[in-house]
Amino acid sequence: PVLPTNGTFVVVINAEAFTWTDVSVRYRVNTYAYGGHGFLLRYVDDRNHYRVYYNFPSRCFWVEKRRNGVITRPARISYYEPFRTSTWVDIRADIVGNTFRFFYENAFLLEYTDTTDPILTGSAGIITRQSYWMQIDDFTVESIVSFSDTATAANANITDTARATLET
Image 1 (cartoon, rainbow, N blue to C red):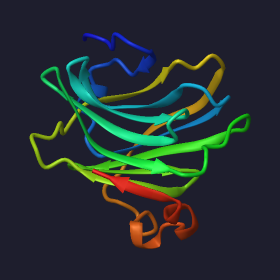
Image 2 (tube, rainbow, N blue to C red):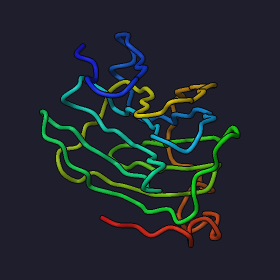
Image 3 (cartoon, one colour):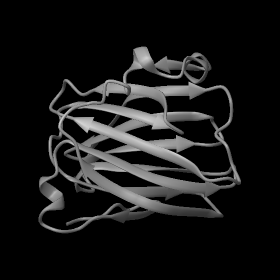
């Protein structure tokens, strides 16, 4: 496969990984406040995948889709409180079909449904960018059948959700 050309990354590369469909992807991160980190999801190659990225300087979290080399950013959320730094935090993405749900410390951040030529299978990984000090641990990919009832926007941590605004 062709791998990403910018940032530092780790992608699961094996035949089974490229057939993954409905999964929950998690990692823990400990970092200072510069740069960013995130997921590579439904990774087929550098021209076909999703990047989900936490950007510290802009205090935003965004979804980037690369389909046949064309880059779009269909969803973004501005987070008015900074992501915690210098401590371990949990990051999670749940993907079922063409719908993605994203969580920070188990607080719901954003749901995105790709209705335009979605990428429905692929591997997963982690990407960092412009981060001068970062530790990542406990990266896991688990198969899921459906979204958990507790992982919906209606049941999200209202305190955290209220601090963020969705920009699509």
